[in-house]
Length: 157
Length: 157
Image (tube, rainbow over all chains, first blue to last red; front, side):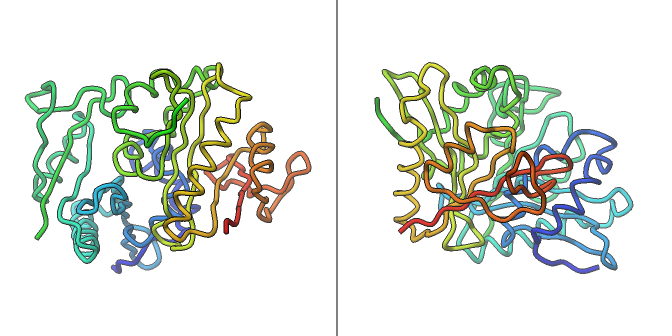
């Protein structure tokens, strides 16, 4: 398996299959083309013999010069439990550290227990929320009405 | 009326009303919170006595160091035909010019005749497409399957 930067052409390959990776859940709407055109240098693909096994899309915060943000990570169902998400995140950390970023942020939905466990394993901590769901601190309506989110934060050195 | 930078708190004000600005069309999905947290310094609000009359969300391309991108512009129905979109775009142009950006890109849907006319008035040209819709060059499936887009480009000096 190889890791490389995201390319614009990956969009046409990924978008038609991405909802299937989540068992039919609509995820494509979270991936407008702009990320594939303008944030390739902090976004990465893991490939296995030319097939996309996983990807991460992140960027350097334009407002907070010590921060970077991970917008989306996805691993093909056939490639789960192989530490591909970990490799992608670590590649992102190294990249943004090179741009003097010290804080990485990411958000996830309280129902996504896999994502919560993954972020905790990767050293993220939960920011204080304003309500509790399933014993977890969340920010109510953070990503729109009814869309509570856990706010993750990690410091890199 | 005043123009100011977008703030994170604008999210909670804008999102509940934004679909109404488009006559019920679902636009909120195009505005994840990340734009309100990380791209405020190239995004602007026009306010009239504390009420949001319009806004533009754009950013500096992280990959192409001479480019900037406009993701979204919206004007409240009560404030249309008052050149608010023009003011927002011109404010964006000035801002990104200060960051040495020379090319501004934006996309729109071929059905959005108002947006097409607006971009042309603002000096954008259409990039070459790969098919023609209503006599206009579009890039087929540019923003996902079935989502043809017109690719606009403007050079600033």
